[in-house]
Length: 110
Image (tube, rainbow, N blue to C red):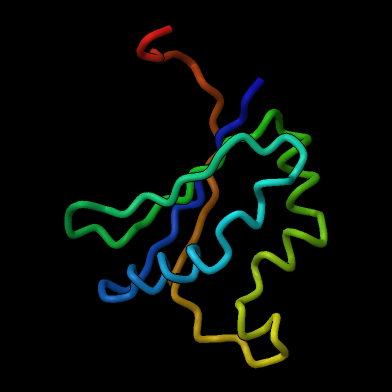
C-alpha cells in the first residue's frame, strides 16, 4: 500500500525561496529509489512559514530503505558540500515528518 511522507519544514518568512532553490538543485535525486512514487514541494499561499515536502512510496519498507541509503545522505548534502566546500547556513528552523496512507479520494477520468 502506498505510504505518504510529509516533511513539514518551518522557515524564516524570507527564506522560502531559498528552500525552493535548494530543492531544485537536487531535483530528481530520489527518482530512481526503489519504491519511490512521487514528490511535491508545496509553497504556502498565505503568510504561513511552513512548507511541505510530500513524497509517496510503495510501502514503509521502501521509504525506510531510502532513508538509510547512501543516496539519502548524499542527496541531503548541498551542492557546495558535494564539491568539497562548507555547508551553507540551514534554511529550516524546524522540521517534522508526518506519515499517512490513502484513506479515500478520487481520480478524474478513471
